[in-house]
Length: 116
Image (cartoon, rainbow, N blue to C red):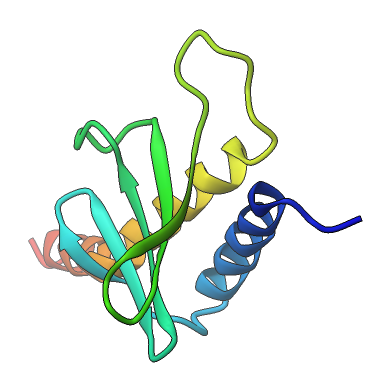
């Protein structure tokens, strides 16, 4: 039986979380709540649909012309959870932290405070 698009995108999200955690891929901020990973073959993006940094999250796949081919979203509030909700939330958070270089900023602030 052929794997569904949702299952393939779920598997993609898991792999992206793993590679991001290992610093094998680099995300860029597209705007305050959308983060992109670009390859020659296409672009992956993860965003907060309501632009508030909170769920629901969307994972999208674009071709090299910028056309969104497929997307996957977390379940709406008050709805039964989707199997991929945890991975999309983890991917959003890891992509955001990396793209905004949050760790370095926190380290620098702590270093500055230690010098006081």
